[in-house]
Length: 370
Image (cartoon, rainbow, N blue to C red; front, side):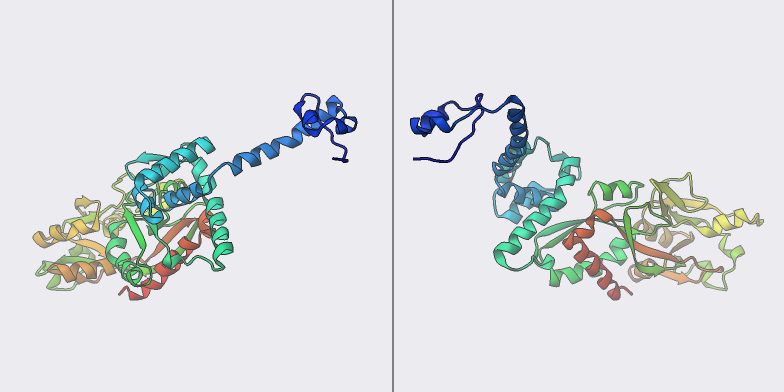
């Protein structure tokens, strides 16, 4: 016979007394209304916990895979299941959490704000669970993951090939998705996790954005082989006689005079022909002509090969161009501008072991860049 005193709410399950039997009837008593309300309040967290227990933990593995790859197909490959299984799991998780979590876009499945808020906690929870079950921490180099890097063609031609060469040996399952950063929304890309890293040259960045210098770059003049400037010493006067080919990475024109573009506190440096502006700013009686303005460094070689135009390029990029086309590098008739090529990431990713591993790998690969 049950001897403990049992307390129930009279508004609760009246069948409880019948299940306990007549021998326990004397031990049951009703709660006052104030006590009933207090007990109901205590029950609320338990209901929420029950809701969590009803969610299949495997759904969070699908969620994490989608955060890493932003692709149903890639996530299915990572989890060794079919794409339809991933889609079905996402549907179940959306119903459980009450949010879309991932929305289709031109650049893949983009996470919602709710998904971004969940991402770090889910990742840490899965890593702790894996550590508890296997007794060893996950190794980023062995993981199947896709990193998103925003970069101009300078980084694609000069910096990233060395990184890819390094990853091919040390992390064959890591993929890179590189997309253009020739826009002014680099901060939004990082804050919304549309990009894991941004590579470029910047003057200032807002709070909450981490930065690390990869290398220092200076500038040289590039012309075609046999160009008139190759026959004698270059002066500012001679340089300004020829039409100039200019690269404006953002494609904007309103701030060309100082070579910077601003957006959300970011000063994004563009590679503008400083000679043209310096002569105008100092009111030197020289007139330079910006004949052609292109949005990419890769577009410059054909123009230079076929005309007498002059361009000022980052030295490493100019060396790359001269190795693939009949172009000549010349020293500037004025002090060269030097800029820091940097990588940026959001401070919220400081706890992302995989991204911090990639940051270190990228820094280490710079040693192979000429």
